[in-house]
Image (tube, rainbow, N blue to C red; front, side):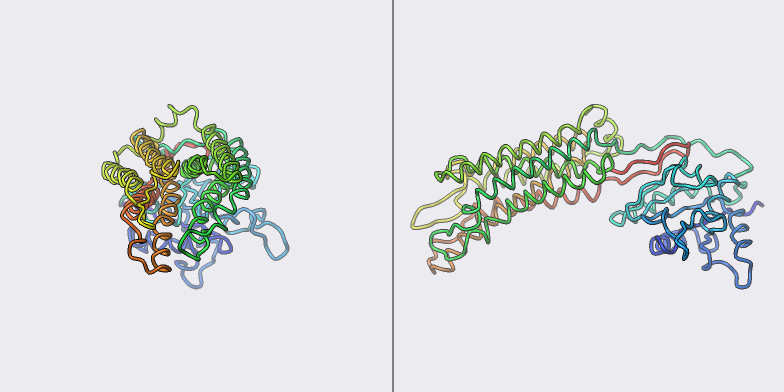
Length: 461
C-alpha cells in the first residue's frame, strides 16, 4: 500500500508564525498530526534539519506556502533579503516542492498580495503560476474548511506520489469576484466629493453644532453632528480604501461609498428649504458633493452585465430572509417619518411634516428597495456595503429624533414634551437595515480556491 501523502506548511517566523500555527492546529484536527510537517514542531531531535526538510517534502502531497505582508522582504542580520540566500530554508522548501512537481498552494494572510515574478529569485518564479487562497481573519473558519475540502482528495489513502501522475482536472473551476472597473477614477472623484462635503459641513456648522433646541440647554452638536460626520467620514474612508487597494478593494467598499454618497445627497436635500442663508448654501454643497461621490462609484460598475453574471455565480442562493427583514425596515422608516416624534408646547411634530426633512429617511427607505434589487441581481457584496452605509447614517439620524425630545422632557419635567413613537419606529427600521447589511457582509463569500491550472493569483473582493 502506498504511503499516505502529507501536508508541508512552509512559513517564515518573522512574517506569519501566528497564522501558520492557527492553520496547523485546524488541519491537525481534520487530518491528524502525523500527516502534517511544520519544521521544528514535527522534526525528530538530532536529525539533520535540511535532510529532514527534504525528506518531508519528498513524502508530502501538497505544500502550503503561508505568505504574509513581510514575507517577500524579510532580511537577515546582514541586511540582505533572505529569499536571495540559496540556503534560506523557506526558499529551499518551496523550490524543492516545485522541482518535484508537488502541489504548491500559496496561502495569503494578513491581507498580503501575491508576489510578482520580479520579486522572486529564479528557483521560485514558478510560484507565481500557482493559484492562491486568501485566508482572512474575519472568515478564517470558512477559508480553512474550503482549503480542507481541496486537500482531502490529494491526501486520500493510497494515492500515488504527485510526481507519478498528472494533476487531476477539476470538475468545475470556481470563480472569483470581478475586479472594480476604474478604481483610480472612482477614488479621485470620491475624494473630490468628500472635499466638497467638508466645505459644506463648514457652512452648516451652526446648524449641526452650535444651534440649541427649544426647551433644552444641550447643544445640537451632541445629537445632530454624529450623522453628518459619519457620512463624511464614510465617504472619505471608502475613497481611501479604494485608492490604496485599487481593483482589489472589492465590491463591499464600493457599496459603502455609494451608500454614504447617497446619504450625503439626501441629507443636503432635506435642508434645502431651511430659511437661514448659510444652511441653504451648505445644503446645496452636500447635494453636489454626494452626487460627485455617487458618480465616482458608478464609473467602476460597467460593464455591469458581465459583473452581475460573475458575482451571481459566487452568490447563487436567494436571500429571502434578508429581503423580508429589509422590506420591514423600509416600512418602519417611512412610518416613523409620518408619525409624530415629539410633542412640544402642545404641537405634534413629525419628520415628514417639517419642510423637506422627510427626504432623508424616506430617501433611505427607497435606497433599501434598490439594495434588495441588487441582492436579487447577484450583487450581494455591493448591496451589503450600501445597506451598512444606509444603516449607520439612518441610525444616527433617528437618534436625533429620539434624543432631542427626551432631553427636552428631562430639562422641562413636562410629560407632554416627550419622545413619541415616530423616532423610535424609524430608529428601529434604520438599525434593522444596519444589522441586516452587516450580516450580509459577513456571509458574503471570500475568495475561492480556484482551478489548479496555472494562472495569475486570484483577486480579492
